[in-house]
Length: 165
Image 1 (tube, rainbow, N blue to C red):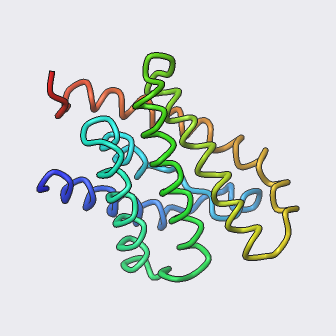
Image 2: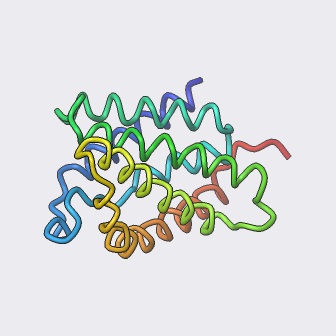
């Protein structure tokens, strides 16, 4: 419980930190973030499982948006949907496909899922599916950051793993 509390706090800090970083990509893909908090989500998937990763993701997006001043705004719903969907999909791929997919591959799948979930929420909010035209641009920026998340998580997990052998 203590480790999950620390993971949630660290994920919230990264979530808020990302919110204050000015991104030059906002002209192309509004609201783009690096996804650093997903390092924590993927780490929790690997070391504690799906249920705990979902809990950390929900707490991170909710508390992070409360502290960041975006709670119950479209930004919150985009972040919440993306975080929740990517946590679930990464956990499923880790549990059932870790022999086929490396940490990098699972993270990339999580990045794609995050973007698709955000666009699904956006399409409901603005009542059009034409928003999916942004997907190639979103993926252009999200895949390198997803790769970074996977590589960092792999390195952190190598030295700080809680899995029982």
